[in-house]
Image (cartoon, rainbow, N blue to C red):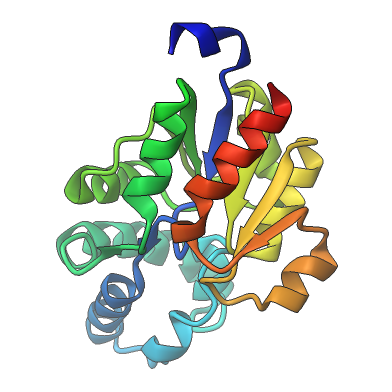
Length: 210
């Protein structure tokens, strides 16, 4: 590891549908929110478009003036209902471990509320070196630059835009709502089927960089 010190890589990872499958938890949280507020929410539909900020989804179901208060309540409900049902995506722990084995750092950059993102990773035993929340699409570049990430891994075209804005290599995994064609059209540099394929890719990439 010491020999690699001058070539350590920092890899950014998205959270929802990249490192974690939060669909069961998010559906449960929306079901509770719908029951509390008496508002119809298509809870299955909400889980098909994960990635953008919570407020964008709430705008489909609530008047604009109610969104700030409803978002606060959703985040409270989320802690109670969404952490336990959420699963690690296949290969998630191994992907983080692969970065660590190279002496690198992993930074999770997500649109999710940061305290809830941390709860997910703690619950699942996924140990990132840093977690930055409430950033979406191009805004993710701020955290990627701050942490010196040269690679950003995500499942959404918004993640590709964030990587490109940060001038980081965009590695897309086809495990979320965006198809391979959409990810490619957005400008992804590398498209993997899932995180299971990431360690082998990373080792090859790191060898090329060194």
